[in-house]
Image (tube, rainbow, N blue to C red; front, side, top):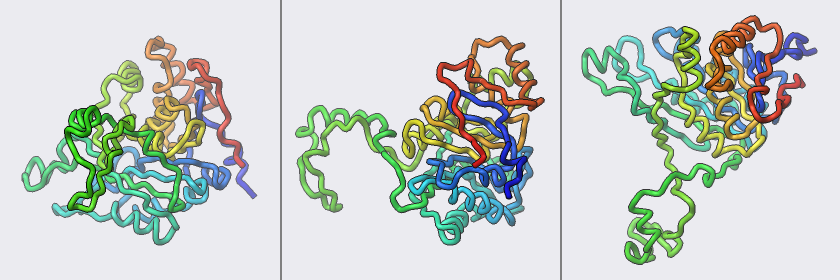
Length: 338
């Protein structure tokens, strides 16, 4: 029999397209329908050596801990759905040697849970500060760590995906080639084995992106940080940029599909979904982070006193606060406890 407390769990707030819930993702996801989610995009607390305020685990127990969430995720994803996991690397304690925890995760997920590794991505953050300080700044024996692994897992070898939704701007050289193909190449099979045909010079609306995503994490003037500053609140210390979830949401889902973030923090994923017209559901343990994440869905021009009133009401958590009145679309129901 289901725990009634979990079945009747209500969101802390809702928006035009989704809802943000407080609780343990393992418990809340059990009450979702199997094969109901199109994409789970999340960035769990990393297995860092130093304890963080948002609750990271020791490296020794991290893989088994995260695998429990992956097992539930596998059940709840549609057969064509995807599970995208942003993970940072770490060093072993006391020595300048890398931990292998983030590489053991895809092996465990695929060998023991049943996922397929659809593709590996690497998020390069050029604005990341030098770390770890001991090896980079002090002893100067390592370069700074500026790349996260982003694993794209799927339940089937053929998950939903369309690269045409994430094309990037052509290079200047490619633009010239498209304008006058004959001036730049002749159709032929190259020594590498690539067959460069006449269609190579076609304008397809953009270039196919690589699996190296260069996105600077330098948010400074968003609604979220602006209201945090005005209310003297500390922003979530481990936010990722909006462009990161946007890429995978556009790549792996269609409008009105359901996207879930099981470690939502400041709820960047929910904001990306709202922007792209996807239904979303976010979960986090910390009510303060959830309350502050509401700033992402409030008008930039809203008076600070009113924003504080909404924040205080969310912290009280006596009822679901509907933020859709500040938006153009009508609210939708996402989580029915079935």
